[in-house]
Length: 273
Ligand SMILES: [Cu+2]
Image (cartoon, rainbow, N blue to C red; front, side, top):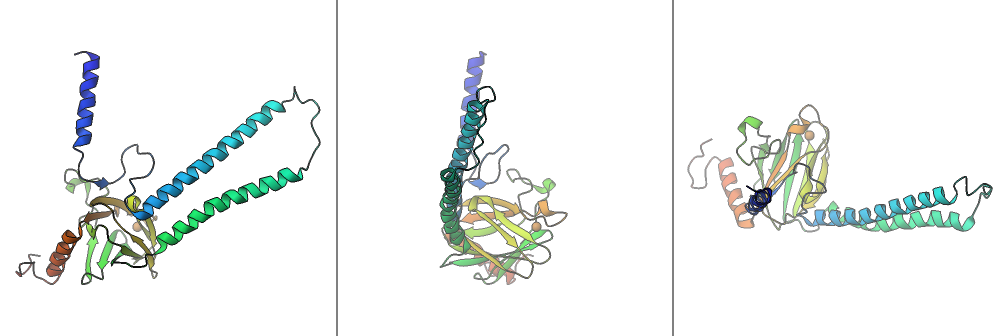
């Protein structure tokens, strides 16, 4: 086969693979640069603040580089045999004090807006409480009949095809899309942190203390995160796995889980447990 044809075939195969990529799953990819896709209003705003900061630091870096280059060239020893003895320049000093202050104000305004936006939601439709433990997460749904369960990581040997390693839990945190969900975190032993990159959440879970934030998931699918506070031996092995579903599917899941917790399945038969 000619190399060109082989390359073409490879490209077609790659395109096909991309086209049949599985349902939405938000997890890190090998060699990934940048953030995971933003799928909550919070993460979208974090993305745009990040982009703004990227412009600012890039422009500052190039400006400083250009000034350094100019100074090195213009005031090199051979061209500048009689160095100036000047020590003060009032205009310059005011400018290089005021300009950074101005830049910081430009950064501070959207930062504070975002902080308050992330802090809490006025009207929450439901609450999810995540409790960090060494080394798994417990969840409570106070608005769904106090549904509770624990979510442990699935060991490598027990993974099913398609399940990401170190990120899959035995029980998914099922949540409805397009719903304002209040998230509360706490812990029962040491400090953990509940982090979900594509929803823009990283919230400490502290013993004896409740932290609050909120999320609104924009698309159904699987979302993966991890504990993000060093919490001991198995810190790396207490992942967070959300299965976001349409509202009706969520309601059906709740009904099933509550019935099972009561000792009966949805059809009214005693649960096999
Ligand atoms: Cu932890």
